[in-house]
Amino acid sequence: MKHLVRCFECGREVSDPFVDSCPHCSGKLTIELDLNEVKERSPKELRSRPFGVWRYAPFLPVDASKAVTLKEGGTPLYKCSSLAEKSAIKEVFVKFEGANPTGSFKDRGMTVGVSRAVELGCKVVGCASTGNTSASLAAYAAKARLDSVVLLPSGKVAMGKLAQAMFYGAKVVMVDGNFDDALRVVREMGNAGQLYILNSINPYRPEGQKTVAFEIMDQLEFEVPDRIILPVGNAANIWAVYKAFTEWRELGWIDKIPKLTGIQAAGSAPIVRAFRSGQDDFVPEDHPETIATAIRIGNPASGRKALRAIKDTDGTAIDVTDEEILKAQRMLGRMEGIGVEPASAASIAGLVKLRQMGEIDWDERVVCICTGHVLKDPDTVIKSCEAIIQAKADMESVRKAIGR
Ligand code: F0G
Image 1 (cartoon, protein in one colour):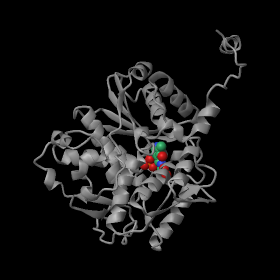
Image 2 (spheres, rainbow, N blue to C red):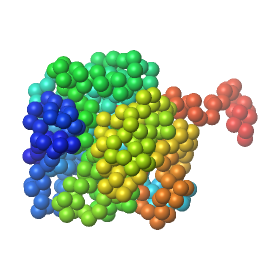
Image 3 (cartoon, rainbow, N blue to C red):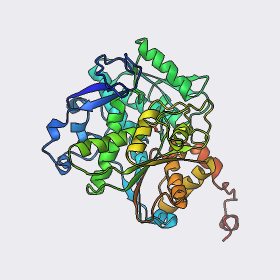
């Protein structure tokens, strides 16, 4: 699809494909698609391609015929009646992104990002990550036979994600510091020409991530839901979802956008604070802390974009405590059979809390995006669930142990 890269802040066109921000004002970059090709079409016509990220090729800024793909996207949208009843809301759906090839939504952006890297002839790709991006990058780099380097915050990456990055063959570096420190370093390396950066400040990544919104629309027979709730960390995903809806609105395919509702962890909530005080910009959190390590980010690179997405859609942003996150995670597992990692459960915790606060009306149709699989972070699950029962190998002992 024909497109150009623009600065989100000053609007200038940026032609150098290897810069990660605007050479004039240092603003973050975004992609402007030429939507003329799809103008006369309807979203239903897209259904001639298989369900998944590449169904939406007309909205992606790379050549689909050369895509580096592991068949990402096409994830289930579960109707959650028990959760709806429990939270006293008419209709609740969960878009389960854990069903992606590496177990998180990151694969949507990475198939596009790595395809772009190949188009540009790059040999080494890299990112900073709280874990999921690194797992995804490592897998897609392997598929494309590129070298990958991932920078992780020391000691704060969930075991499943770490194992994946190592397994797919990335060079894994733990840096002394948090995600924000790791991102600073990897950007320096990108600017020094040592690697092609595939964090979500690379505007090709959110383009792939947009497809989660297109899929939700497809699965709801193109009826726009009232609200979409999602966790916010580095803040690109909420922007991607917003961009998807604005493109379809521009084409006249839809006439409204769901209220985009961002959830952060209480110890790591710069966007929530900015939103509450009505600011367009945020004050970074120097020492972010939360059990939801995926969103343990104090200086979200796409924070300004996220604030625009929330404000423009009449959405909101709240924080939830670690306790609320763990409770929501277990509830979703035990009530709906859906296993998500703590950061993903933030959207469920947010749903419950916003309903209690009266911010969500009972008759809303709400979609919660659950971004990653429960197996990403087994340690947290094992610590937060009831202890395992030990018993002798005979029926009497087992019956006693389980109290029957
Ligand atoms: N949920 C999960 C499971 C994540 O891994 C992330 C981000 C988010 C939500 C937040 O998305 O950053 O677009 O606001 N993980 C990144 C990573 C930072 O490195 O894997 P966001």
